[in-house]
Length: 249
Ligand code: IPE
Ligand code: IPE
Ligand code: MG
Image (cartoon, rainbow, N blue to C red; front, side):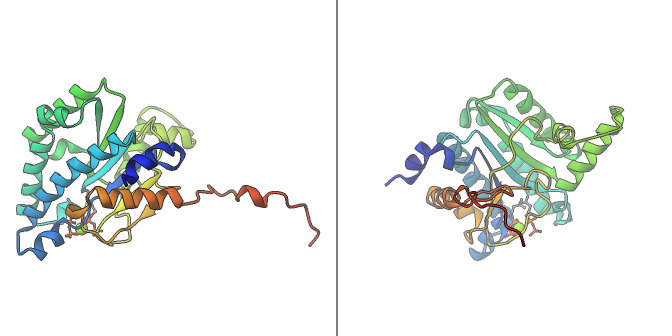
């Protein structure tokens, strides 16, 4: 049975915004006696399929954590390998063929990458900015703490002297978007590693053991089934318990 198709009809139980912390590429390669960069390549091939499947299922917002502000601590060769992968991935021709109707929103200061990658990313953002059917947020040189620091500095630069939650929302990379309903981190690690720290306040978290390059449609369906069974309360209580009367205690 195609569980995905089934879930699609239960729109209230499907996330509107799903986020992925793609983890385990290195371990996937190591298990096969391959270089970490080969794991990243397999990871990005997987990424294309997972994002497409999410959009097919009608999930409008997808966020990806591809490179953190802390990933600069990795060996240069691995970083260079990732940069090469990003260059290919962001190439607008193949990207638009892969994900038509999709707007790309890059989270993170990508101006620090080599100029050819910056140009490729700028071109992709410009060519997709009119689209609004699907939104793809990609975190490169992204960190939740840096995002908040940037927001505060921009708020100061704009001369605001008082903020509320809505103001902060407007200064994040995800301005105007709903917060992620569901955050999936593969490879069994149970942490956020500086990802969407403001936006994750009420996200459902899921940590499957599968390594990212093995996260296939079946794993996605399993994850969506888990999500559909979660009870989200947002600090409230379930309705059947609300007929309580005041008791003197
Ligand atoms: C995640 O896979 C991908 C990126 C950080 C770009 P890792 O490279 O962290 O893989 P592991 O955790 O070492 O297995
Ligand atoms: C988190 O993965 C960053 C990305 C997925 C881009 P890491 O593998 O870098 O995280 P830690 O170091 O295990 O926390
Ligand atoms: Mg990792």
